Image (cartoon, rainbow, N blue to C red; front, side, top):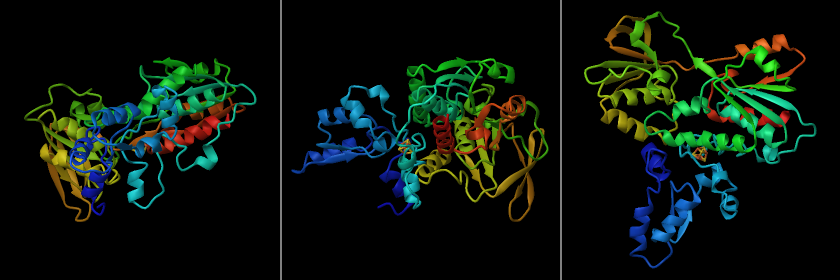
Length: 398
Ligand code: SF4
């Protein structure tokens, strides 16, 4: 049955479950029945399917999400090009999660899904243009990939030393490593296509214009949103991003009281809370929403909640922060307005993002005749799917 969140999560197991999670059940059934057995779920690549068949786990393999993420997977496997396959992350956000909510299926990392009529064909460029992409997150990489595949000459600036942007960060949360698959395929593709990737370069107006571009696509992402309430936490005030990147001091551990203030309602706050709980710290997460992680896909919540509760994390919905003063955080109940103080040794802000669009606006001012557009979080911070769709469209417009 798929009638409860718990059952839905088990029917279409997410990345919280091991790969090939149902194989052993299929094998035990196959041992006692005289009819062919099909196994599905968390078999994400052809080699895994072949291995399951070779072991005798099943007679046939069902691969649903794997084929949503990359409908060309069988052709690529047959052609002996496994690296070309865009592997499913198993995060369920774009496909099965939407289906369970009565929405059409999409794929967060493959923007063609659900937009086949618009995006299925990639027209070669009529005129080869010099394209500068600023930002090496998923949006920047997708725009660069599409433009390069169409024959344009593409240079991509990324200010950090690694590609991946917010997805790289998301994959650093506990149990989220597979989310990184959404960027590894893109990184491989832009490498193969000869995109000139310049890591560790902070793009400036002069730097971009020095490339003499015909077209600029800005995908500079977002920065953590600062608090809208008074916040004087000193060194004990940090961000969920810093926690996930392990930039907080290694001293955090048993005996520490950590408070995560979550106004993002997605994975960032709970991910930081889980990472802190793994150090042995005592963790509480508050949110003004009805539930913690309100916007997290329903198929992901049961496993996440189980881990948080098992780790002793206190989940406090309908509660927002109104002030941080030293080690004391004043919070209020959304409906009663009642205020109380929570003492914390570390306060972690997960307040969502703020568009990082300064370069885009500066370029528009400096070169009004130049074709400049922006995609992804630097338009407005949203989810991976939005960035990928905007980026693939931008790459097609060049
Ligand atoms: S949305 Fe996520 S889980 Fe669904 S097919 Fe795409 S990558 Fe896989």
